[in-house]
Image (tube, rainbow, N blue to C red; front, side):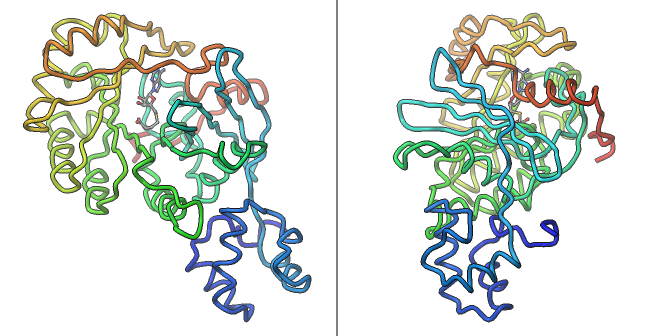
Amino acid sequence: MEQQKVDILGLSQTELAAELKKIGAPAFRAKQIFRQLHVKRVFDFTKMTELSKQFQAELQERFCVNLPKICQKLDSCVDDTVKYLYMLSDGNCIETVRMVYHHGISACISTQVGCKMGCKFCASAPLGFVRNLTASEMLGQIYGADQGYAEDRRISSIVLMGIGEPLDNYDNVMQFLRMISDKDGRNLSLRHVTLSTCGLVPLINRLAEEKLPLTLSVSLHAADDKVRDALMPVNRRYPLAELMKACGSYYRTTGRRVTFEYAVIAGENDSAAAAVQLGKLLRPVFPGQRPHVNLIPVNTVADTGFQAGQAAAFKKKLEQEGINATVRRTLGDDIKAACGQLRRDSIELTEGVVKGNESISGM
Ligand code: SAH
């Protein structure tokens, strides 16, 4: 049965070598097969023509390649953005977005099916958490979204900003990062990776120790504990003072500045006073540097009642407070659906709303 086979796409080169040893294959085969999968993107063993027919059959017997299936693909009419709804081998759905920038192609990938964090403005929150994604399923989102494009149009930067909280799936995310940056595989520099977190302090501290060159982005959304408590339950566990301490220490340990995401929500977090408070909060964290905040006009998600605030006006206020701010360009506006919305819609259509049963309070 397919399930009992090992998913070869999620094995690091070392793990693959160990698996191959069990069937008596020499060590060099691991590198060869790893290249076939991650560079040449050959996912059918019978098409790995460098291998003998007999070896192909042995691989087929022992391994499978669990590529997520594209079940919906939305092409934007206004730009080159493409959104994918993938179905995983167990029938769960996740989303990936492929975006074209002048500096290259970027993918926004999911790290979990659902999420435990319960942020009040987010489309994924009401559906709860189902399970972690494997490293293979993270790679598969990228390889799937590269299908049909020439090699020089392959995804060249990755943001872990789709469905899920990447630090809540720490080990699989690390495996994914090691594999995507493997010199014999996709060889993508982690400088081109951004990991976004809602602020799980102990795991930010753990990530700092890995000293990876990726960009850490913290979803802040408020500079006041009361406001942030109401928007993001995670703040009750790790309030702003602790979060800022972790960001400062991340910067000192890795030498890499942390950036912040701020969804501008009308009447909630976009006042002049909020800008002053944000300045006071962030300036001391990176002495001698101007903090950087990405402003996103909040995407309206059904039932949340939040409306987008005036991001451009808030940006001006922040600049007066010594903060660099950019307003995130909204790509693929016509196929928008806030992050997580495609999955939510597909679940509502097919099954009615199914709720996962884990939340941050049960973490
Ligand atoms: N869990 C991680 C990554 C996934 S969410 C995190 O919290 O950072 C990716 C980003 O989208 C986060 O900054 C999140 O706060 C933001 N986001 C979620 N729902 C949104 C909405 N409706 N409008 C704007 N941004 C939203």
